[in-house]
Image (cartoon, rainbow, N blue to C red):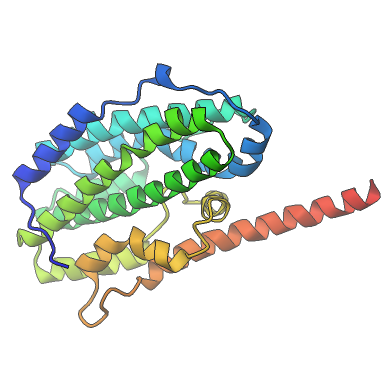
Length: 300
């Protein structure tokens, strides 16, 4: 398959089109009517808790990006501050409100200040050569995150449809899902343009490959508890049924741009391990919970 040639003008037009065609979802348009709230909660509580939290933490992410990418282009700033950020904030509110309609507690999101490690990277990013490497890693992380979201929302939408929960499926999940491909396209085009333009020397691509392999992490899953929560998304939404195929799809952009010569399009081991570990943590927790409940059922 031929890789398309991308230039800054095309990316700018894409961002402007996203802003015009996909304003933040009107919060008043959501219909939280539920046929069986208990069944929906039992089916989707774990994934919904994780997805609402991550979407609501975008407020902090925008602050981090302002530090991490000093002197960023106006197109990048327009995307993350005026298009992506407002859209994602509304996604978080929609999912949090749905959770509360299911009897779940309000989402506890970390919207605090910029952590020290981001400030350190931001200081290093003032060095032009380092800045471009960080920018590429930002695009690759964004592409993988958005592709994961696309798969998760598709699975959730299909599950709600099977349950006959058409109101929340259409006005919440589908309303969110339709905006995610545009985000993915921005990250993909931006990564392609950065590499195709020749802005990165071979040593910078090698450094980006090395850093990605050592620092790859699942979005919003820094702690063991959060990794377990991400695992609930994989398991409960059926994404682990064909995990390798899904991970290949999720990291396809970085595989194409960073994979060393001779490796082809093999799924990077670091990515597959991160997803497998999260799914295993959730299964372990679920198994422990089931074993804890079993004696109580026998006693009853």
